[in-house]
Length: 361
Length: 130
Image (cartoon, rainbow over all chains, first blue to last red; front, side):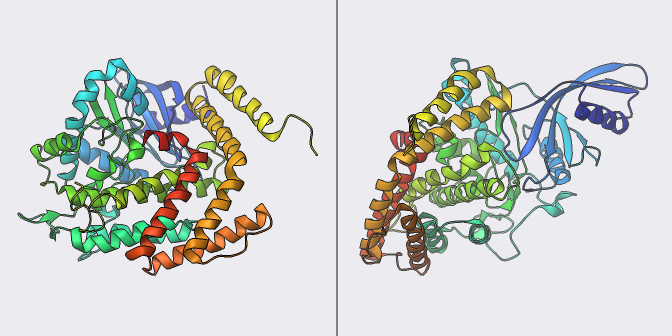
């Protein structure tokens, strides 16, 4: 048994008040460039002698990895999401200091996350048909979660009186100015475009989402896309990876899943497999606020810009010597994908002459 | 001068080792990273083949936007000078000079050409699919 397995068994034994715990089948999973994800089975002998084996996932920080959110807050989000009926793994235990970095354990659900399998495998034909509506429904459930649940204080949110769009653009421009190692004229064009269109395109927002106004203070998942959705032959099992969640505009999530990098070669705009129409219809039917397609286009430009800045930041993790990952190094060169998409989106018919996204939604 | 194999021929051997031997024999994160590494080698091979021609085209494009300058005498000087010129271009976009009008159209066309060149190196399939 490895050190990690032993430390984990000891932690679970104390935290769950078990007589003994054996950790087996421990293996590192693919994906997750900055934080480690492990699969394991925990065989727990209770005080009364009963024994059960739980299939678990360990989410664990590595030293030096850029930190988006504390594991305690992410665990709390999972709890509230699970209670709210959002398809998520059931949270099991929040970790302590015993592994050296923050961690938590959640239930391991059977399924697949690799988008390329979803796109091409015959066994997922039914899942491809079911997922667009399931994505819309799950997102509506997320956007109707409470935003002030106990423990949510640490969630990033726009200051009072500031539109979520303005806050998001400003925040990302600051990050971009701080981390970019070379000039990116395409990103400069995108920042100008977003700032110029914000006032033109933005429907009237009301912080509380009152009738007739568009809400821009909802729980935004922040990384709602293929790769973070667990699926099986029947479609969606769970929404994963909540570490980028924040309070903001629901259109941010609606647009993020349509960023081309999350289509993985699939031809359709929504995660490669769905049309905008079926996705938006399912979202509205499940209680999501009415979708303004032009406004979602605005956030699609933002989404591509944001993914481009994330690419720069991932590369910096390698360039600054915090990681030797070849994946992080190579992501720096994916920045060009987002620049290409930004140029296409900004140049789309109607995008320039009649204000943002007026004709191209 | 150096002996054969050339840089490209050496890299091809590394690429084949990754693709044909390491990727199939690994699993999990190692398999994934080996696949990424093979893609990195492909990117490097394409950049070695295309960089000089691409940078010259970018230089000529910037001549149109920012006014002509003599072409640098070496690739190394060209790289540094392109950075300075792109900073100037970025500064002008940021100042609003490319918000509208003929210059905007020129800037968009130039930036599209440059991004196209970057993708020819990093991910040609992105251009083919799009």
